[in-house]
Length: 70
Image 1 (cartoon, rainbow, N blue to C red):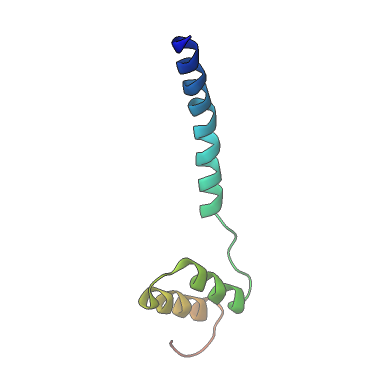
Image 2: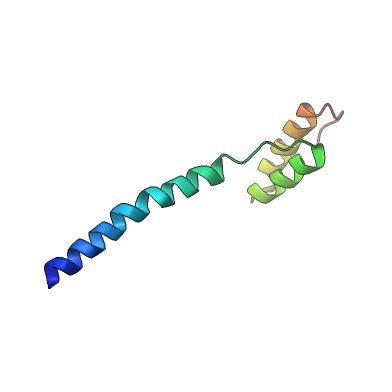
């Protein structure tokens, strides 16, 4: 009885772990934004700190040839 429960639990872990890893990898490989506005929005969504947001916005400006610095 206990053995069958342990086998069921380990099988569940073995099956779900690769699925979870694939989902995490897919989330990290999002498409690059195709407009400046989407790039800035993505920077806003992924950064908690203003200093890193500023760096990412400046990268967006460089990528889309927007003059100036944030």
